[in-house]
Length: 87
Picture 1 (cartoon, rainbow, N blue to C red):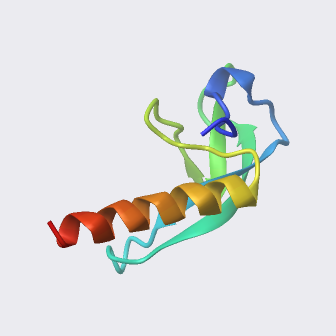
Picture 2 (cartoon, helix red, strand yellow):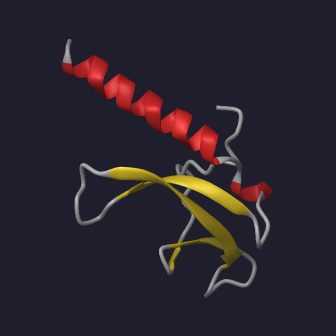
């Protein structure tokens, strides 16, 4: 997945794409656009702004440079889960 973006390479105003799990329906996930914004409590850091909410960017978060790359990764996840269910 060469279109992943690292937190150290992000700057305020960048648009990234994430695979977002619906907190109300855990089995539902979608690709969503999000913005890199100044961290609301740490001026030396950035955060993810998604669905009108700030999110801390964790080391294991996958942030993509394009919607297409996020969609491909999402499809790979779905395909691998389908393959596992038939084992």
